[in-house]
Image 1 (cartoon, one colour):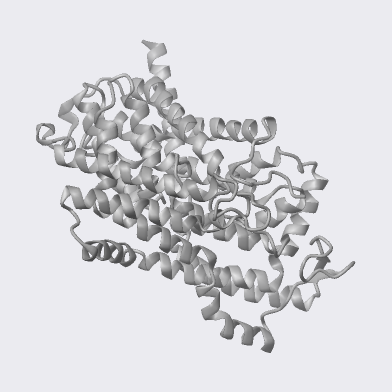
Image 2 (tube, rainbow, N blue to C red; image 1 turned 135 degrees about the horizontal axis):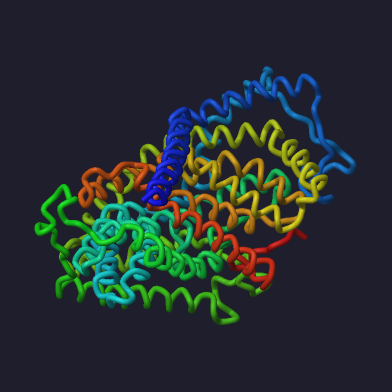
Length: 529
């Protein structure tokens, strides 16, 4: 009896400490302004800081390779003040072009136009339901996590459709519904960066990475496809890790489910399998996707393919890779319309236009964010602050002996920690890329590898971040099955996923990149030079 009392007191103490930690994270996150306000404040701060450092003539030796544009032999790079007449003129005249020339803006919007057709026609929803509901009982857990990762192509679909569906499926199988919810949440949010196909996040991040890389090499090109190999293999590894955590840690901890804890009548829940018409439409959409792939393959597989590099004949640097966003658009739009036409959800071009316009209408907040993010990135580049910080930071890393692959452990951990308070992948990368991409380039690593490492850190802590935009929705879904469930309980349930993902995914990164020497994507380098 005394031992049981002691264990209970110990568990209560640990629970109290954990809840205080979560409360601290939430408090710190609430101190942060809205990301748009944050970028506007940072842009203003860059102007002030550039004026101060410019007054004191702060400079560093030019780190750019000889022969690159703007490089002077044995030259130095000084902080350029924007608190001057010339600075004000540049800000005023560049305000619009900073926005319209921000690389991720156009690429994300174009890719989303294609995805919107597949989403609004019902193709993505039907494909997800068919995948999950046709899985065997033994494979249902890994299938749910896998479906969650794949659903990241249209992130709202994963949160709104798959997570509630996974809870219902687990309940129908006599398993704890919160375990199903956790497995789907881990795939959708914890495995956010992984996927089998390129999605809207790839051009979004690569555009920011390329802009940051230009501080060191103005001619460096970072395409949307540069992390595809690593993210493709990550899809299967993260699916396995998510299923393992669900079945070995989360589900045993939850125990047997008591239906009396639910806040709804569980008998009213219905899982609608795809109808025969939807299955027929899905099959024809698959045929359309296959035909699109065959046509695209005909342009790059033959040695004289019309989309190969016109001079070298290689795929690397070819119009095919440079135009990958157009192919993302086509690969979703055509099968999406074929599905909609057969399923009866789309009849003509008007329906396609309506689907595209609805998606563009939902991008108002993102476009506003991009305006202020573009100003921050431009000011950072104009003032040379990014280069100066990168050179100083690279010198510090070398002095500390952290100029080898081990530096990525600290980098991934830092990104995961920042993600707890700044949940947006694009917002976080727009802030950190101008500092860390040039810094890690200066100690010898290529931007493609740096971006892949960032994507790990940005994903693994999504499931335990109270600042994640869909966290409230997940909590609301969870309370259907356990009416007194609080945020601390949900985070404690998801914490094992975060811990296993950060260790396992980082290990995969090291094995793939540094032990096997594999590229993270087509034509992607690991080291500079």
